[in-house]
Each structure stands twice: as structure tokens, then as C-alpha cells.
Length: 113
Image (cartoon, rainbow, N blue to C red; front, side, top):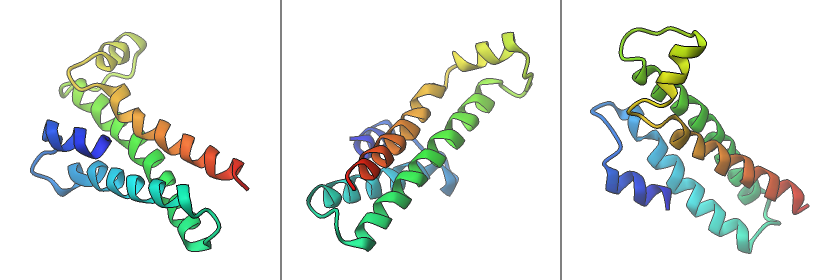
């Protein structure tokens, strides 16, 4: 449902980089459905694993960019300033949801061996 959420929220700016989470979420949805029915085909398994690693990376990078956005120009990595930025207008934990999806997918596929 993340692609639908990103589409409904119109979660991107003018730059092409802001559309990366949308495309990673679509690939994640496709390969998750596919791997539910076919775990044995090697290329499907590797495509799923790569997509899940892309989700992890997208989530971490997205959280970083949300945090930078919340600093509003003055980046201060002190504890107080960082905690204020974490609770800013751009939800940092929302981006980390991609990391959660990726880690869960990786744990599920490795456990399925």
C-alpha cells in the first residue's frame, strides 16, 4: 500500500530523486507477490532480495533527508536540536518504514530456505 499512499499524498517535488521511493515501493509490491508463489526460481529470489535492500537503503536515506529538511537550514547535530528536527514537519519515522519493509522481507526470504 505504500505506492498508493505516496501517490495519494503526492509525495514528491520537482526533482526525479523524490520519486525513487514510489518506484522502489512498486517493485517491492510486485516481487513480494511473485515470491509468495515462487521462491525457488533464482532470479526471482535475487530480484526480491535486491529490491528489499533497495528498500532498506531508501528508508535510511529518506530519513536522513527528512531530518535535514526539518533542520530548516541550520544543521546542528546536538541532541536537543536533533530531537526537535526528528519531530519536525517531515516525519522521519515515515521514511524509516521502508527500512522496516526491507528488513522484514530479507528476514522472511532467508528464513524460507
